[in-house]
Picture 1 (tube, rainbow, N blue to C red):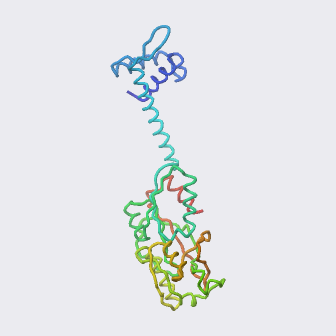
Picture 2: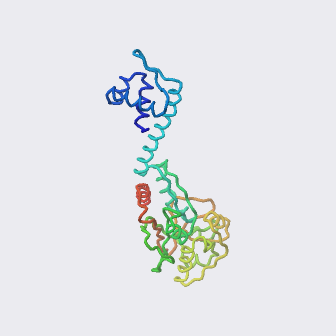
Picture 3: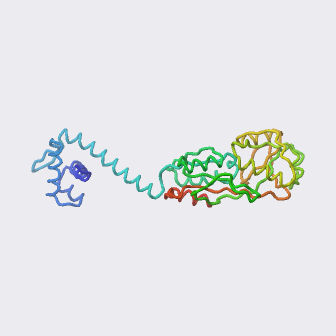
Length: 297
């Protein structure tokens, strides 16, 4: 039994007229009649009662019609979904996510992708950069966001291997202070003044590249980082800052606000934070291409 035989039967059962059904299908009436007889022989029962004056469905025919319509609809749906997947309109993307990126432009870009592709399921995983690279190599995620060490020529502390990478985000590193801090009223803050403040830091295991880069930055300016508190999520860190328990540094996209804190540039100017998109070369599907394109913009 072929799918076309079901379509033939549905046309006849709907029209209850072989001539009209044949016209609808774009075939001659005799071959249509032959195909219906062969279908009945294959099933082993009469589906249509035929007289010179009319065609009627048998009880078995009515049962078969419902099943045939469901099968054809499912097949048509499968074809439509496959074609949409080929165009990158449906599917699933598993994405590695670093917590501090919540305060960059990345969430807005991901939101734009989701708005344009509502039938794509996004599965986000909070992973530090090295864990993302491992997950990419193992195929556990499709895309990762890899922070590059900022303000130095240091190599990444992990091997990218055959992964493809492209820098898609550049944000200025800025100072984050409680509004109650004596430095918050200044438009620009000397690094030496900022470095004297107690610091609220990411835990190294949650973002080792960022953690090491901040420590290296302080060291290059001749200061030791005075870590007073540590947390593994930016919301917690910013909450501690807002409570007046210290200051911190973040790459800031310029579109977020939070009660009790201010964002200020430091002098000398802090380095630019670069985030690269990483993916496996063999995973360059139309869906991936759409995601990468929006991340570039």
